[in-house]
Amino acid sequence: MSTPDTLVIGSTGLIGRWLIPELTRQGRHVAAMVRNADVRGDELRGWVAAHGGDTELLTVVDGDLTAPGLGLDPLPTVRDVYNLGGRFAFGLTKGEARAVNVDGALAALRWAQALPSLRRFVHISGYRVADAPVSEKLYRDKGAYEASKVEADHAVRDHAEAHGIPYAIVNPSTVIGDSTTGETTQFIGLAAMVRDLHAGKLPVIPGGKDVWVPVVTADYFARFLAAVPEHAEPGAALWVLDEDTPLLGELLRILAESLDVRPPRLHVPIGVIRRLPAKLTGADPETLGFLSADRYPTESARELAGRAGLAFPPLLPALRAWTDHLVATDFGAQDPAPTTQASVR
Image (cartoon, rainbow, N blue to C red; front, side, top):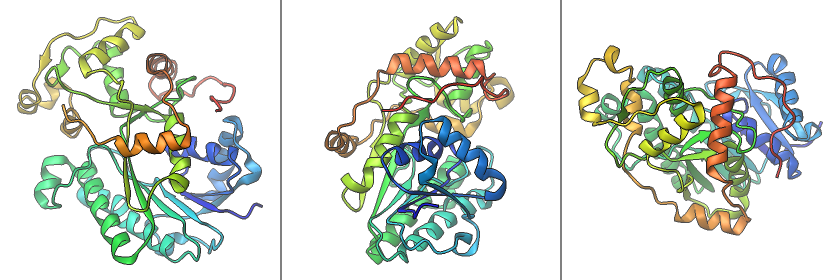
């Protein structure tokens, strides 16, 4: 068993599954926190081995964001903590979302605070997190998932600043599959829109012509995260997204071409979609908040990428590989065919 220098919370989610192999390839000794480690540990080790990681540098530990002290045994050698844990789902109640996304994030931060040699606490937030006041109106307008991520962003930042905890908050855009293989384990959000496009159930483009839904590939994001403890200043807020992502209408045209289906051409404003019955539009109201013309402050993330020698992979081939994987797995309904390890760089 290795002596871990890094704790990854949320190890079996999309981001964790790409981050852990990347960290171990760089020689980092990782403690991967999962629930029911006795049951899920072998599966995670198999995944890491199949994706180019070093399982000799991996320790699977049992823990839970909702348990006192995370339910973890002491790990005094850990220097870096990645909180990737959270409930990413639409239709949650406020209590369900807050229990993990807010209270769990603070529990992880307090656990890290007690470490004798903490270098960095890295909290994953989201690119749509804005400096909005936390209120019942926020939960009503944004939905429980997005509102809880906004609240967690405030809570983590406030507690870390008040107690002098070295932290960084990373805000990824929509994370798609590996840039080479297209492999993903996440099938909601933009992937659900691709599913509807493939099934002929996306007759219009939601939002105006300036709507932008930026993406980032899973493997690039893993490499970026691995670089954060060394290269980010304490208190950094980093928006990570590929600015070459086309506007939504053009993005859907590219995806439709890859799927060999007819792309939608008519734009329907979000305000109109909100007024129509969900049964008619097929749109989950919570997803509409992610359809925006906003742009994001990416300068600090670009500077970090430069210091770490990182470059985005070519986007169009990555999009095509991702859509191929989505179709091959029936959008998560089937297990993918066995593959060789994902791209290693």
